[in-house]
Length: 483
Image (cartoon, rainbow, N blue to C red):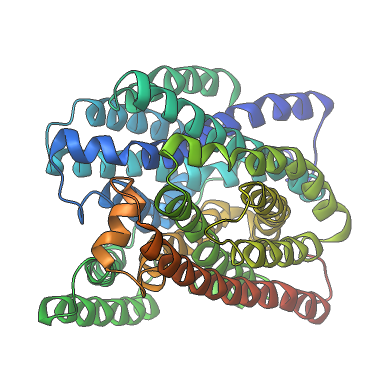
């Protein structure tokens, strides 16, 4: 086996083809994130799903990826990252096909959870595969190209989702994953080969269960609070969830091989990188919900027309990602990552000034600025984590990064609803997001004021992420090396 840093020309050519395969995996999971949001009203009506339960079609998928990311990353370190990546494609295809034939609320949520298992296998191992394929000085560029897959997937999700839901059937938003996934599996079998060293690990089942139940309890309480008044049931779920999360911390301190490898936090740049990802996810994922709520509830746009206004931001992101990755390779990841977070603070400031009569062009401007910032942050931050990780722990490190980002994402929606609905009923705010109603003029003015508060809260969280990212400069200097 060649040393980790050596690459021959043929290997580099193979790496170029392999990155295309990894991009397809990221793209298909990104498609499923945006395309399902557009289909929520139809899913609610077709399957008679309760209003306060339909969001679990989105959140349940993210929650499963959050819980499994480190564990399936560990499986990649044990049995081969490519093998687990390919398995993820197959599970994702199966989950998609089952979602397409779902018959009620329970079945659609359960099959989305199965989809999440496949998504976890794909996303947690994709970063590790790139780390195996490319030397340290080229990984930023590779992660930048990987970002193209996410941006294109988000755009395709919006375009295809709008067309499919409007002219065909919501079930085809899941059927469409099957041929794309099969092409991805075929290409992966032909082009991806194991390069990383295997490592022996044990799965942290107790840690995974305690964190899973803890996050579920807190998330269930916060989500219920978004639609119903605070009561003893919500309090019970909230307290129980927090107790289980506390138990998870105790379990991790004593586990031989914990779900979250605490030893990695001793690496100087690892902790700020992971925390920056957490707060960026908490601040930024809410933006999608908040803007759609504004466009559908206040401006009375349809889900497809509302989402089309966000496409320019994703397209700009696709173009900027590789450039930002090259900057991360050349100047160290801390610079483009921190700059990207600062740019996203500006985007949130623009969003916070949307009014009932604001020109819709301002939404497009804000989405472009936000896409520019996100595309600077993601490849640089992933590069920082993987450069700081020992090669035998690439899968675990990639999974930990996904876990921290997704913990922020799964709580983003509830945070956005709670803050934005301070001026109208929570149930009405929830219905606005789903797309099943819009607001009268008087309510629209009050709701817009609530949106401003939510965007300012996101600005604070994003600024905190930027400070954490900037702190890596001190860690780098103290360690005496570049991450």
